Length: 157
Image (cartoon, rainbow, N blue to C red; front, side, top):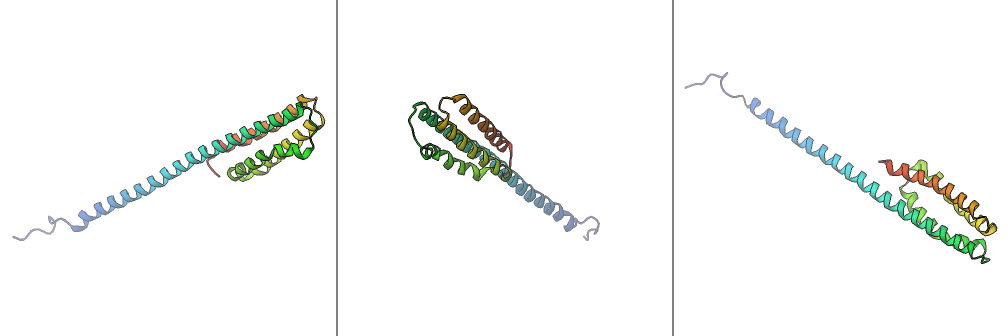
């Protein structure tokens, strides 16, 4: 009983589809894992940024209140003491700088320095003109807020 060679299943036609299926499955697993890790990384980055930015803004507001309290008390303290009130802001701003995009680091630092120098100066020398002090602080804060919000929307470091 010799079989016709055309009716014998070719080893190539049996193994090739299995190999192609196996390669497709492996490729799918790798691509799926990479995409899943990327999504997890983006979620972690957004959460971490939001927490850091929130912590920074809370610290900035607390320092602002401390400076206003000192200015309202009419205690004569020197500029160095006012600047010490902003030490927590300087510390927290370093954490924010670590996670900001490169293009936003210099503007952020500029606004922080502007807020601290203007706020302490006006609080010290124009204690009765709280509107001016408040406006200077608010303008700087609005610019910082824009930078932080644009970074929260970004998926990149």
